[in-house]
Structures are given as C-alpha cells and as structure tokens.
Image (cartoon, rainbow, N blue to C red):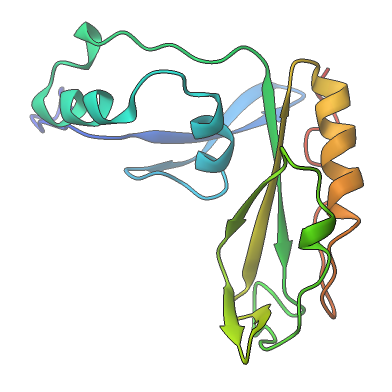
Length: 163
C-alpha cells in the first residue's frame, strides 16, 4: 500500500491456508475477523487498548506485545442450511455442561421466552485454551459434543493437521 501511495493505519488480517506448496493467502481484512479473533485475544497478555491506539497513531512498533504461552482452538457451531438460507429459533442446550474454562462467544443467538435459541448462521464459537496443542484440541471437541441444537453442524477437522 505504501508503494501505491496509500497510508494505512489500523488492523490488517491476513487469512492463510496451508497447502502442499506452502502457505497461500486467502484474503486480507482490515478488521478483527471471526473466528480468528476468538483464538487470538484469549492468548493476549498485553492490554489491548494501547495496541489499538498505537495502530491508529502509527506507533505499534514501540508497544510491547506479550502473549500467554499455549494454544487456543475454536470451532464455529452453525445452523442448518448455513451458509445459504439457515434456520432460526432452534433451542440451544448443553452450554451449562461445558468445562469452566471453555470460552463461548455468541454470534447468532437470542433469548426467546427465557430460552436461548439460534438467530443466525454462525451461532456459537466454542474455544479451548491450553498448554499442549493436542490436548487443547481434544478438549475442545469433547466440549463441543455437549452442545446441541437441531441441525447443528460444525467442522471436525479444525487444526487436525497441526501438531
């Protein structure tokens, strides 16, 4: 961007995929991406506000960035029909069965008559953190198995080729 004469300040996310020919760029975004943010922020030890301010002001290289050691793995629980026309209003159960340290990010949920129900295509992001990658991934999928809503689906291969 600099070579083209454009000043850019802020966030720049690069979506990558690992291929047999090496990493390839899928996309660029100038925002916190979903579900990427859900695995980055839980590991951030530094205060986020100074990092954001420095990115806007152009001094990010002068701000110390520290992460918690370990790993985070995220699975998106999606509604039936997603990414096309998806179903809404399906009761969600099992969140009370998750281990205490499992993180839940609500993306497409709402309370309807006191019941949590689906309200979007990407319904929930379930995130596990830990010091060992394989254990963290296994724990994530064990916890995901406790959550249910009609026609729920999710990828079962997230992080399967890592570690």
